[in-house]
Image: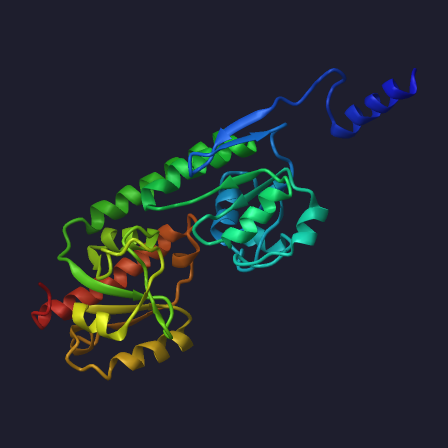
Length: 303
């Protein structure tokens, strides 16, 4: 046996492939309609967002996720995956040492400059992005195609779509409540109309008061909020921070949200991680908005 043939034979054994077998190239289309070409289905996946990690696990690819970022703790099995940074910045040296087959990024939340750096290093990028709740199923199916777990991903996508349909039916006929969803305080950050959380509000029978803004996470002024006069203000943050943010609004007793005592702490952080668990979080959000609706209606503050 020649040295070259022997090396090839050992390489096939190490891959667990029969002699003569060659892994087929893979081409998939990601959530941003970009073509992703890989030499073979990926065995080593790095995920750079908590929601993306959750999606990969639900798609049946959790055992291929070799690294992720902080706050990737859903499902519980994801907590054992090594962290290499957070959604804003990762350790590029560690990424290089991991030598992933593909890096799954979040265009709406990861640092664009760092995404460009990863691409420049030659690692294939797959962009996973949700702009509406209806995107959950199709996005999950595409991840199943990427990871070679299509059957499991398709079944999970069908379950998500049934849950979403149930939610839509339950809250479809509710009176509209104008809401400020606050995600930071100084400056005040909220969500624009094209952000996934605006879709969650719409499902609950609520209207984002900044629905007309195209920026996903705009900073807004106190004056702009007061002028739009929401009937409820929902602070999506841990309780200690949210209560502090909401106390600031009591300086404006004429605001409908203050008059109705609709200053709401919402600390289910699954809502902001943009993974499949956004659906149970949305149900919880709909519950607190329903309570706000009843209070505002009793004072005739809805229009």
